[in-house]
Image (cartoon, rainbow, N blue to C red; front, side):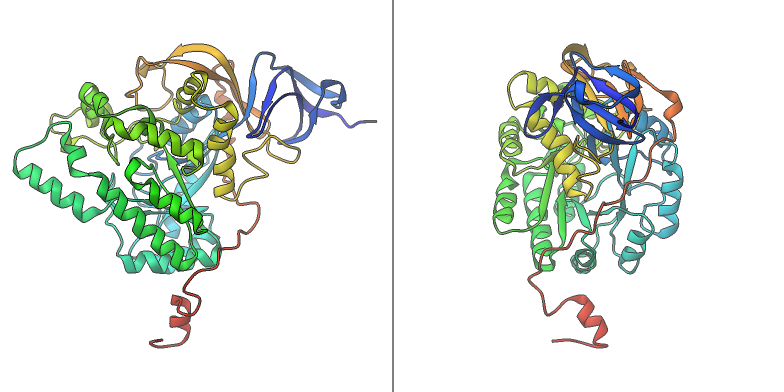
Length: 476
């Protein structure tokens, strides 16, 4: 006699990165126990009819700024995770440029405490900076899932660490198999160009792009790849924005460097024409670029040079985004709730397949952060994390409907086709019939890699920092 399960979802089409199949899903507790024909499902306490819906693995957004602690007037874990849940996102990775920055054990403990109200599961990117290299392993042991290194300036004004500190940090993370995200822009070029423009009196909406040309990204990505290849560290490039630097990723992957990269809907779908229209609302780092970048970034995503979709969800209060001088306007805007409908709209236009989207939004992020098997896949033994979407449903994105504390998006009034209707995290609905389930506040849990990830073999096999330190003196 078959053991009763808690829930059977039937009538839907289950989507992987390889196929779309009509199947039912049986869930016991927080995990999937069976997938197959409905008549093969075990008896269930509850059955849920998903007829007309495609069931996707819940999206994993590995780049959000939930702003808490320190900037809760912009966002907190309650509002940010509510936006994620209503956007079909079941796991997020939060960035460390909060106040205090997540670069110490105390700051990590505070971040984890504040995150306990989350509706969705979460990972924490701890900070890699000039002064905390000796704490990286302790941060891993205390619950940091990964790290972020700000090679270029962005919100929070965290100084870029020296190349020596980055290299040493990569050596440590390589030994632990931990991936490090980099914000890849060259700070000295940007600072000098912005200072020159401010001196000349330029503060218009296009000045931000002029201060951060493509070469800033090209140089920083090349430098990060060189350090990762030399040390064997796992590297992730955040918010890839420029066509000009894609060759660096192609070449590095061909050489076997473990480098992954994300892009965001804003770099695929917007350009300087939209900057002319929207002004400071669209100020973001890296900047929105010329139209010539859009198609190559799409091609790179389809080809696999770019691995995943993230959002760089970065909310601010409206008055912080609409100041007269572009230099005084905070960078970023909310995105975790709008990513899925924006991308599904492009799927409906034939730009890629729904299987491609699952690969970008769930499979590849799960693999990059060591979660695949538990997250990113609909299979027995995996968490029951789903976004159930209606690919035919049309809607219009509206500022006032956002669940984020920030109600200012460049996507306002944009029509979409394909929206998440229900979201489940570990077997529990956190959104149902397009409505947030308020009682799931606090349901989210901190994620952990399901197994240790051995690091690639570094090139510097004889002269690591560890060898230098343990030798007790200079090693040449």
